[in-house]
Length: 499
Image (cartoon, rainbow, N blue to C red; front, side):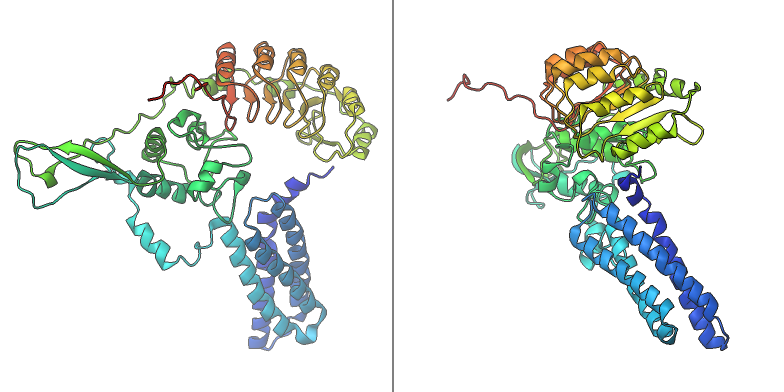
């Protein structure tokens, strides 16, 4: 019942073992040469452990690379230098006569592999920043020192030697919000996870084309509407939320940086320099003394913000799953778990002391409705079910409804329709529902409105409309509804007047 994606996440932890052990072996080799002492046994043991751990790290790294979230060319370089390090370490162990030379080569190759690994994680310029990027960094504005309430980002293009007069003049105002405001923020806080070498969720934020394209979960930028742009709205989620960006533990955006991104998106998210003709003038002011009216930074959302109210309300509601986990339940027999294992259904628990279970169908190759029927045998213990990308039908939800303790149900990219959602009313403890990539519409949302206990609903790339979501949000004011990425119906412009 191994979750291979989970194994890949251990690569950053495992990979440091061979680095330390092989470097220690090299240090002992140098010490042996210098002190003329016999350390062959210790060096051999270190090489054996180092090469084995390097091989394990290679396997975990290969699994991690299958996510497709890293630059393929850089992954190949890191992969083959890592494999070479493991092989060379093994040869150094097996061939004591050539150990000194092989170990020296191992350290060199290991260093190169480490450099490629660091580039994958932190960017290619992390260790040796280029002069170009270093120069560009000097020109980036210091948003923490900018006062958005007083400092304009625009400049006036006019003869600076013009004499003061009372005449109204037309001058150019130039603004380059993406280059001067948005891009520096994204580079400092987002590129490490959403850049050329690493693309979490298939999303890159280092170019106009990449930002407009979005990631695996749809578009992230809706020009002119920050609240419906995940690029902005995810910044405002509680830091402990799984969707909060940047992730917990990463450097967070300051209030000024969030305000600047809000302003850029509100202005239509322009990626090019904007040139405007404005009229300026005054009784005593010279042209070069004219101050273009500044923009005001948007106020940061507070606890009464309409954008955050659903999240805060959901957090204040009782956690049904936590309540259930606090109750004792009989453990499931090993023979029952073995039956699921044979059918490639991954069954895992919430900890060694808990009898409650999670069912994941990610490895199921030949889905059959009988698999849902089999879940009835673990109904009292079953809390979370993931049926992503399986040909699940509406009737399967009716079968599953006997599992009353289910708190989380993932129906991502299944064949569930509006008709099947009516069965969700039979899940009294369902708090999280993922309907991403399904064919549900506003009609199906009417059934969800009856599930008053729902706290999180994911509706990416469905056929629901903005009006339907607004109606559902009104019925479930406490629920957090994720809508990013789907397209709303275009308005009928056939009757539009033409000049």
